[in-house]
Amino acid sequence: MDSDRTRSGAEASAPGTGEIIGVSDLVLVTGSTGFLGARVVTSLLNRGFRNIRCFTRRSSGLDGFDVMVGGQHAAGVDVIRGNLLSRDDCIKATKDVAVIYHLAAGTGEKSFPDAFMNSVLTTRNLLDAALGHGVLRRFVNVSSFAVYTNRNKPHRGLLDESCPIEAHPERRGEAYCYAKVKQDELVVGYGTKHGIPYVLVRPGSVYGPGQRGITGRVGSGAFGIFLHLGGTNVIPFTYVDNCAEAIVLAGIRKGVDREVLNVVDDDLPTSRQFLRLYKRHVRPFRSIPVPRLVSYLLCAAWEKYSTWSEGQLPPVFNRRTWHAYWKGSRYTNTKLKALLGWTPDVTTAEGLRRYFESCRIRERDVS
Image 1 (cartoon, rainbow, N blue to C red):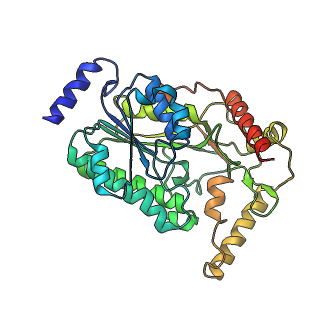
Image 2 (cartoon, rainbow, N blue to C red):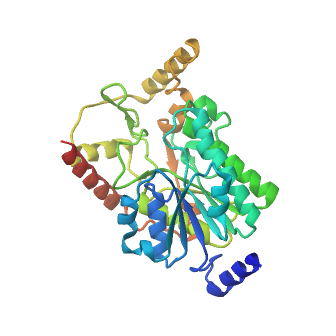
Image 3 (cartoon, rainbow, N blue to C red):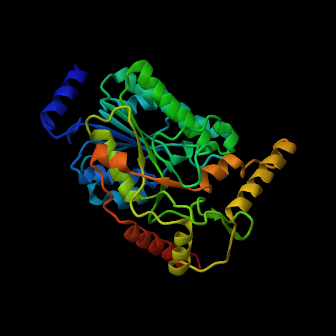
């Protein structure tokens, strides 16, 4: 009976709109208080959705989230706390939910077991719970460009949705990459075996006010001085508000089940252009440009020594990492625009301006 009531409500509230649900249908956003999750909630509210269940950890603060959604928090936003490792919490969170936006992930974990537990096991619990209720119309899994490998592509080759996934993500030496690959595999498996309608959304490098640090695609400051490894490589930036809007559309547009959608903005800067702008608008600092061949040889040497030392030196820098982040690729948002009708509302120039301004404020407050 619950299933029939939910379906009839959607059909009545969204006839002919090209959307699978109406504004009164219940949607769930996991990771809702995070950097990107809070913007997804805001985007849903801006589109008129007024039945949003926000799942967050018990330890998460809500001050930033409340500021983000403003006075709309009480109007259609229900915040529930729990742990996605708890099957009971997942059952409660997914009850009557038509669309799940799954952004919660183990982003900060450095160990492979922790990353697997907080990205893969949590996703399995969420999918099982949704299956049990039988009313889910779409599961939007927010993945990452980290899952791709371009080792067999030429320098400046096109990285799009057809690009191969890292076959041995454990060799990347990156727990996040490993967990995201396994998470995507799990979601696709549930779609194949159980018929769960899903969409995989893979953002590039998400940036915007509130984000800390410079993306590793530009370089690394791990050695006490910033090594600029990106050179003239294009950075696959997507401004946080643009990315959130793409994620929302992926959950409600008809005809996109089982699709993979990469999210990048237009007019992407090169690593060199970005670093120059950052130094000009935030703070100047010394950096050493590392030629492409030299960076590759350094990664190869690091990888070899890590193997020889039996992991005493973690394989943080290796050839797979180099290919993924510093080899250099081209990017496209053609499929995203064609299937969702998405366009980036915030231009790259304006997005960088806002980002640099927030970085300046943070630098001033720290000093």
